[in-house]
Amino acid sequence: MQLPLDPATRLRQAREAKGLSCRQLAEITKLSVRTIEALESDCVSALPEGIYRRAIVKAIAREVGLNPEQLVRDFSAAHPDDLPAPASAAVASTHEPSRSFQVVLTLAGVLLPLLTGVAYFAWSSSRANEVSAIVDEAPMAARSAEVLPAGGFADASVALPRPVIVTLTMSSRCQLRIVADGREVLGRTVEQGETLPLELGEELWLLGDNASAVQFSINGQAGRLLGVPGEVLSVRIGRDDYEDFLVRH
Image (cartoon, rainbow, N blue to C red):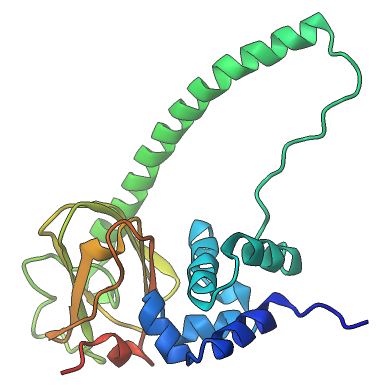
């Protein structure tokens, strides 16, 4: 009996059956070629963590004709540590719960949403302060890939060893997270018209809730669209492939 194919192999075969190269699929999904290749090589851990990892798998699955939810489940089964399955509901007891237990459940149903809301807002405030501290307190000379003030770059007298500048411009308000060389340098709501110049080190990950809101240029040359309105943004721009993101004339 033939064993079922692993999800990475099925993904690659589905792409090839569509007649798409990795580069063509990257253009369609607004992901990098390296991201496509990593998933087809079964390297789930190379993708950004959290909801972005699941969003990447679903976006690629849709374009090659696979069931997005099923493919996520298959990758989750193959890599439970790298792509955990959503927590499932506990199996209900076959015994009738006591009246006191029912009262406890009722109180929990009332209190848990309130406690969750309080914890969320406390966490959001703390997280915003942490991100601000990263940007504000780091010495200017040490910022190799951090967000610089919109008014300009670092002092011209400081030599930039690898001058590849990615300038982000917001066309509308959105949530944006920027990870530079494995370190988060921005995580907040950005406003329409805001400009964020960044110096590219080895790689930048752009993550957000509206791909079309983030427009950019690299060393003054226009970059291509990163997605449609409302689409989850999850894009890696690397030192090795940043030219793939430029508009071709």
